[in-house]
Length: 73
Image: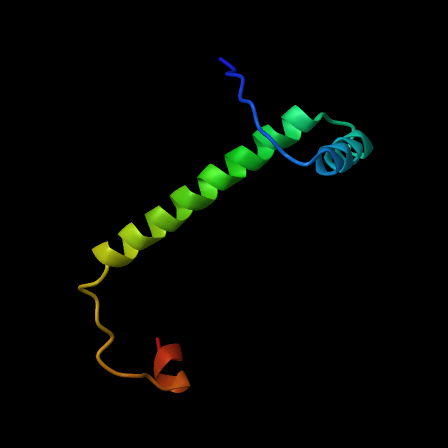
């Protein structure tokens, strides 16, 4: 279900955004929905990363390995 949101911006900025959307064969609303989705995912990705790093905080390499040591099988 789509929900309406009212935003305020400079008239010139809105006009430029509409022209950009038109050039991309889309609407300003569709562009805003795409931006909002990326914004939320980006925030979630950062949260997921921080959580992963916290979960993995127990891991310690102990020392730096040489290139040859890392490539040994």
